[in-house]
Length: 373
Ligand code: SF4
Image (cartoon, rainbow, N blue to C red; front, side, top):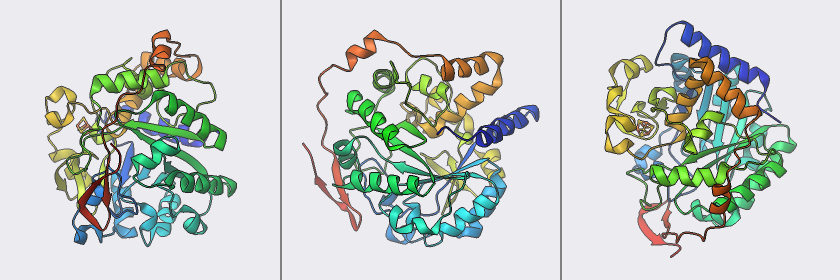
């Protein structure tokens, strides 16, 4: 089941309206983080490293609605933390559906079966289930044995109840392209609508600093994964963003394309970095020194970044900025098979040795233990 036409039309007409209005810095997706608490302690995530008094905080539904109305983006992604741990997540979703926002509720799905009765199927609501690969890879990435099986079970339940379901996958150094491709087959067989992908980013606060990919390695890995693509694979991403990951295109970062609002306010400049906060979206746009960010800026924090939250908005903008961009998108969507013999050979390369992942306990995040050597 592809993305509904109504969603494609909403997004396309929104971008065209921004272009016609001559607006250069427009948001595409609001990243709304209503809490930082989580029931996992993934090695690649920095969010649960906040002190206890911050982890206890929740955005109220009213604060969420104010941010959504202020920002005006047609899509809202709700990451966190684990949004299903928010005591009023159902009210937040209901209010956003009433506003006709396309919502991607990003969840590790551990609580999805238990809480699914709180939600009604809607074309505006998609559960975006965090799965970082096949069973072994996912359980290792989220540092939780059995996490894959619970998530897959919840995906089946959500699909059975008529919800839209996608997956979101973050790939770190050492990911096995062959296994990632087999994972795509598994997800398509399950019946998910589409898959979202991103390379990991090196969070200061993340306990595992060895697994994040440099740009050249990122491109090589995605070339191996995404070349010689199966027709059955559906991605919930701009096809030009996928070409960017494969090294076929270069884009500057568009940090304002997916602005972040959380318990601290509007985060400068992007979902990943924290160079201060603004009290309003207008203040975020007007006072952030955007020229200091993106790979070209020379900012070391941006040097290796190719993440979805920085670059997918760039790819979408490229689609609507020129006839060439639009035709490239049509071609990539309908006709390109990405045949690549070199990439096929890469699939047969021996697996790179994997650095140990670090297990952190949610209750004592400073107490670190190795889980795999
Ligand atoms: S390059 Fe990455 S870290 Fe830097 S502003 Fe863009 S999204 Fe943020």
